[in-house]
Image 1 (tube, rainbow, N blue to C red):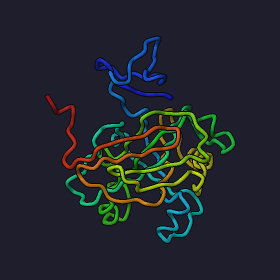
Image 2: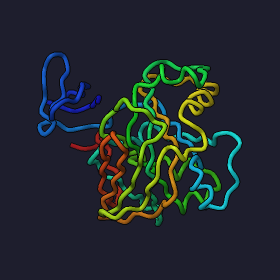
Image 3: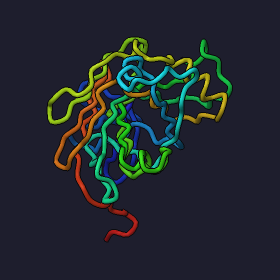
Image 4: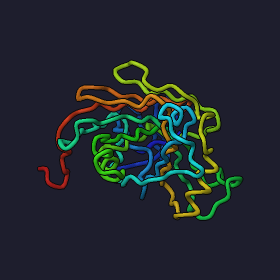
Amino acid sequence: MIARFLFDGVVRQGKVSDGSIETDGTAYEIGEVAILAPAAPSKVVCVGLNYLLHAKELKMDLPTEPIIFLKPPTAVIGPGADIVMPPSSSQVDYEGEVAVVIGRRCRDVRAFEAEEYILGYSNFNDVTARDLQRRDGQWTRAKSFDTFAPLGPYVVEADPSSLAIETRVNGRVRQSSNTSDLIFSIPELVEFISGIMTLLPGDVIATGTPPGVGSLSAGDLVEVEVEGLGTLRNPVVRGVVADPEKSG
Protein backbone atom coordinates (compact mmCIF):
# COMPACT_ATOMS: atom_id res chain seq x y z
CA MET A 1 0.00 0.00 0.00
CA ILE A 2 1.20 3.48 -0.87
CA ALA A 3 0.25 6.60 1.06
CA ARG A 4 0.84 10.33 0.68
CA PHE A 5 1.00 12.27 3.91
CA LEU A 6 1.93 15.59 5.45
CA PHE A 7 4.52 15.69 8.22
CA ASP A 8 6.25 18.78 9.58
CA GLY A 9 4.92 20.84 6.68
CA VAL A 10 6.35 18.53 3.99
CA VAL A 11 4.33 16.24 1.69
CA ARG A 12 5.87 12.77 1.58
CA GLN A 13 5.03 9.39 0.06
CA GLY A 14 5.80 5.93 1.37
CA LYS A 15 4.75 2.33 1.86
CA VAL A 16 2.24 1.45 4.57
CA SER A 17 3.06 -1.46 6.85
CA ASP A 18 2.02 -2.39 10.40
CA GLY A 19 0.53 0.97 11.28
CA SER A 20 3.38 3.08 9.93
CA ILE A 21 4.52 4.61 6.65
CA GLU A 22 8.13 4.10 5.60
CA THR A 23 9.93 6.47 3.27
CA ASP A 24 13.66 7.09 2.77
CA GLY A 25 14.49 4.74 5.62
CA THR A 26 12.29 6.57 8.15
CA ALA A 27 9.05 5.16 9.60
CA TYR A 28 6.21 7.55 10.47
CA GLU A 29 3.36 6.38 12.68
CA ILE A 30 0.04 6.79 10.84
CA GLY A 31 -1.52 8.44 13.88
CA GLU A 32 1.16 11.14 13.87
CA VAL A 33 0.74 12.33 10.28
CA ALA A 34 -2.01 13.83 8.12
CA ILE A 35 -3.02 11.32 5.44
CA LEU A 36 -3.58 13.00 2.07
CA ALA A 37 -5.13 11.77 -1.15
CA PRO A 38 -2.72 9.03 -2.28
CA ALA A 39 -2.17 10.62 -5.70
CA ALA A 40 -1.86 14.17 -7.05
CA PRO A 41 -3.34 13.76 -10.53
CA SER A 42 -3.04 16.16 -13.42
CA LYS A 43 -6.58 15.05 -14.27
CA VAL A 44 -9.31 12.73 -13.05
CA VAL A 45 -11.02 10.86 -15.87
CA CYS A 46 -14.44 9.61 -14.80
CA VAL A 47 -16.64 7.03 -16.47
CA GLY A 48 -20.43 7.35 -16.52
CA LEU A 49 -22.97 4.52 -16.61
CA ASN A 50 -20.54 1.62 -16.26
CA TYR A 51 -22.44 -0.85 -14.05
CA LEU A 52 -25.03 -3.14 -15.62
CA LEU A 53 -27.42 -2.86 -12.69
CA HIS A 54 -27.07 0.92 -12.57
CA ALA A 55 -28.07 1.15 -16.24
CA LYS A 56 -31.02 -1.13 -15.47
CA GLU A 57 -31.93 1.02 -12.44
CA LEU A 58 -32.00 4.13 -14.66
CA LYS A 59 -33.81 2.27 -17.48
CA MET A 60 -31.09 3.32 -19.90
CA ASP A 61 -29.63 1.46 -22.87
CA LEU A 62 -26.14 0.08 -22.38
CA PRO A 63 -23.47 2.33 -23.88
CA THR A 64 -21.57 0.96 -26.85
CA GLU A 65 -18.37 2.70 -25.73
CA PRO A 66 -17.32 4.33 -22.45
CA ILE A 67 -18.89 7.66 -21.54
CA ILE A 68 -16.15 9.84 -20.03
CA PHE A 69 -15.84 13.25 -18.43
CA LEU A 70 -13.16 15.09 -16.45
CA LYS A 71 -12.84 16.39 -12.91
CA PRO A 72 -10.15 18.98 -12.20
CA PRO A 73 -7.28 18.15 -9.85
CA THR A 74 -8.47 20.95 -7.57
CA ALA A 75 -11.52 18.81 -6.71
CA VAL A 76 -9.37 16.10 -5.13
CA ILE A 77 -9.34 15.72 -1.34
CA GLY A 78 -8.06 12.97 0.90
CA PRO A 79 -9.62 10.83 3.62
CA GLY A 80 -11.13 12.78 6.50
CA ALA A 81 -11.33 16.04 4.56
CA ASP A 82 -14.67 17.84 4.34
CA ILE A 83 -16.93 17.53 1.33
CA VAL A 84 -18.24 21.09 1.06
CA MET A 85 -21.75 21.50 -0.35
CA PRO A 86 -21.76 24.75 -2.36
CA PRO A 87 -24.40 27.44 -1.79
CA SER A 88 -25.47 27.16 -5.45
CA SER A 89 -26.68 23.55 -5.10
CA SER A 90 -29.55 22.05 -3.12
CA GLN A 91 -28.87 18.41 -4.09
CA VAL A 92 -25.41 16.96 -3.67
CA ASP A 93 -25.09 13.22 -4.31
CA TYR A 94 -22.51 10.56 -3.44
CA GLU A 95 -21.23 8.08 -6.04
CA GLY A 96 -18.90 5.43 -4.63
CA GLU A 97 -16.37 4.08 -7.13
CA VAL A 98 -13.14 2.15 -7.62
CA ALA A 99 -10.30 4.35 -8.86
CA VAL A 100 -7.35 3.35 -11.03
CA VAL A 101 -4.09 5.21 -10.33
CA ILE A 102 -1.72 5.36 -13.28
CA GLY A 103 1.94 4.56 -12.63
CA ARG A 104 3.60 5.19 -16.00
CA ARG A 105 3.09 7.57 -18.89
CA CYS A 106 0.32 5.90 -20.85
CA ARG A 107 -0.64 6.55 -24.48
CA ASP A 108 -2.31 4.19 -26.99
CA VAL A 109 -2.04 1.25 -24.60
CA ARG A 110 -3.81 -1.98 -25.51
CA ALA A 111 -6.09 -3.63 -22.96
CA PHE A 112 -3.90 -6.71 -22.62
CA GLU A 113 -0.94 -4.55 -21.50
CA ALA A 114 -2.89 -2.07 -19.36
CA GLU A 115 -1.84 -3.60 -16.03
CA GLU A 116 1.79 -2.67 -16.76
CA TYR A 117 0.80 1.01 -16.59
CA ILE A 118 -1.28 0.85 -13.40
CA LEU A 119 0.28 1.71 -10.05
CA GLY A 120 -2.71 0.38 -8.12
CA TYR A 121 -6.27 1.01 -7.05
CA SER A 122 -8.04 3.22 -4.54
CA ASN A 123 -11.47 4.33 -3.32
CA PHE A 124 -13.22 7.28 -4.94
CA ASN A 125 -16.37 9.33 -4.44
CA ASP A 126 -17.66 11.13 -7.54
CA VAL A 127 -19.57 13.81 -5.63
CA THR A 128 -22.10 15.53 -7.89
CA ALA A 129 -24.38 18.57 -7.65
CA ARG A 130 -27.28 16.73 -9.26
CA ASP A 131 -29.59 19.71 -9.56
CA LEU A 132 -26.93 21.67 -11.44
CA GLN A 133 -26.23 18.69 -13.68
CA ARG A 134 -29.90 18.59 -14.67
CA ARG A 135 -30.04 22.35 -15.10
CA ASP A 136 -26.92 22.63 -17.26
CA GLY A 137 -27.57 19.62 -19.47
CA GLN A 138 -23.88 18.74 -19.24
CA TRP A 139 -21.69 17.74 -16.35
CA THR A 140 -18.72 20.06 -15.92
CA ARG A 141 -20.04 22.45 -13.27
CA ALA A 142 -21.87 19.76 -11.30
CA LYS A 143 -18.80 17.55 -11.03
CA SER A 144 -16.01 20.10 -10.60
CA PHE A 145 -16.49 21.92 -7.31
CA ASP A 146 -13.54 21.90 -4.94
CA THR A 147 -13.78 18.84 -2.59
CA PHE A 148 -15.95 16.89 -5.08
CA ALA A 149 -13.34 14.16 -5.69
CA PRO A 150 -12.50 12.37 -2.42
CA LEU A 151 -9.76 9.78 -3.03
CA GLY A 152 -8.00 7.30 -0.75
CA PRO A 153 -6.92 6.29 1.72
CA TYR A 154 -4.16 4.36 -0.08
CA VAL A 155 -3.08 3.02 -3.46
CA VAL A 156 -3.18 -0.78 -3.30
CA GLU A 157 -2.17 -3.51 -5.73
CA ALA A 158 -5.20 -5.71 -6.41
CA ASP A 159 -7.05 -7.83 -8.94
CA PRO A 160 -9.79 -5.40 -9.99
CA SER A 161 -11.98 -7.93 -11.77
CA SER A 162 -14.12 -8.85 -8.75
CA LEU A 163 -13.94 -6.34 -5.91
CA ALA A 164 -16.86 -5.77 -3.57
CA ILE A 165 -17.76 -2.08 -3.22
CA GLU A 166 -20.04 -0.51 -0.64
CA THR A 167 -21.09 3.07 0.09
CA ARG A 168 -22.51 4.00 3.49
CA VAL A 169 -24.03 7.24 4.77
CA ASN A 170 -24.06 7.55 8.56
CA GLY A 171 -23.43 3.81 8.76
CA ARG A 172 -26.37 2.87 6.54
CA VAL A 173 -25.55 0.93 3.37
CA ARG A 174 -26.64 2.84 0.28
CA GLN A 175 -24.66 1.08 -2.46
CA SER A 176 -23.48 -2.53 -2.54
CA SER A 177 -22.06 -4.10 -5.67
CA ASN A 178 -19.01 -5.71 -7.27
CA THR A 179 -16.68 -4.72 -10.09
CA SER A 180 -17.68 -7.95 -11.85
CA ASP A 181 -20.79 -5.95 -12.85
CA LEU A 182 -18.76 -3.39 -14.83
CA ILE A 183 -19.87 -2.92 -18.43
CA PHE A 184 -16.36 -1.96 -19.55
CA SER A 185 -13.51 -3.64 -17.70
CA ILE A 186 -10.61 -1.64 -16.32
CA PRO A 187 -8.20 -2.80 -19.07
CA GLU A 188 -10.79 -1.76 -21.66
CA LEU A 189 -11.09 1.66 -20.01
CA VAL A 190 -7.33 2.18 -20.03
CA GLU A 191 -7.20 1.30 -23.73
CA PHE A 192 -10.11 3.60 -24.61
CA ILE A 193 -8.96 6.59 -22.57
CA SER A 194 -5.26 6.35 -23.47
CA GLY A 195 -6.30 6.34 -27.12
CA ILE A 196 -7.79 9.81 -26.55
CA MET A 197 -5.42 11.48 -24.10
CA THR A 198 -2.04 10.78 -22.56
CA LEU A 199 -2.33 9.58 -18.99
CA LEU A 200 0.47 10.68 -16.69
CA PRO A 201 1.80 9.08 -13.50
CA GLY A 202 -0.64 9.85 -10.70
CA ASP A 203 -3.62 10.39 -13.01
CA VAL A 204 -6.84 8.77 -11.85
CA ILE A 205 -9.54 6.87 -13.72
CA ALA A 206 -12.80 6.67 -11.75
CA THR A 207 -14.50 3.57 -13.13
CA GLY A 208 -18.19 4.35 -12.59
CA THR A 209 -20.70 3.95 -9.81
CA PRO A 210 -23.12 1.09 -9.03
CA PRO A 211 -26.85 1.48 -8.32
CA GLY A 212 -28.04 3.25 -5.20
CA VAL A 213 -26.82 6.79 -5.77
CA GLY A 214 -28.46 9.27 -3.41
CA SER A 215 -28.25 12.62 -1.69
CA LEU A 216 -26.08 13.93 1.12
CA SER A 217 -26.85 16.46 3.83
CA ALA A 218 -24.64 18.65 5.95
CA GLY A 219 -23.55 16.66 9.00
CA ASP A 220 -23.45 13.32 7.16
CA LEU A 221 -20.47 10.98 7.14
CA VAL A 222 -20.07 9.18 3.81
CA GLU A 223 -17.88 6.08 3.52
CA VAL A 224 -16.74 4.21 0.41
CA GLU A 225 -15.30 0.78 1.20
CA VAL A 226 -13.70 -1.38 -1.48
CA GLU A 227 -12.62 -4.92 -0.77
CA GLY A 228 -8.93 -4.98 0.14
CA LEU A 229 -8.49 -1.22 -0.37
CA GLY A 230 -9.69 0.10 2.98
CA THR A 231 -12.36 2.71 3.64
CA LEU A 232 -12.58 6.31 2.47
CA ARG A 233 -14.43 8.45 5.02
CA ASN A 234 -15.44 12.09 4.54
CA PRO A 235 -17.74 14.34 6.55
CA VAL A 236 -20.15 16.62 4.71
CA VAL A 237 -20.52 20.33 5.49
CA ARG A 238 -22.25 23.25 3.82
CA GLY A 239 -20.42 26.46 3.07
CA VAL A 240 -17.62 27.90 1.01
CA VAL A 241 -14.23 26.24 0.62
CA ALA A 242 -11.51 28.33 2.23
CA ASP A 243 -8.68 29.47 -0.04
CA PRO A 244 -5.43 28.71 1.83
CA GLU A 245 -3.58 31.37 -0.17
CA LYS A 246 -5.93 34.03 1.22
CA SER A 247 -5.88 32.85 4.85
CA GLY A 248 -3.60 34.16 7.59
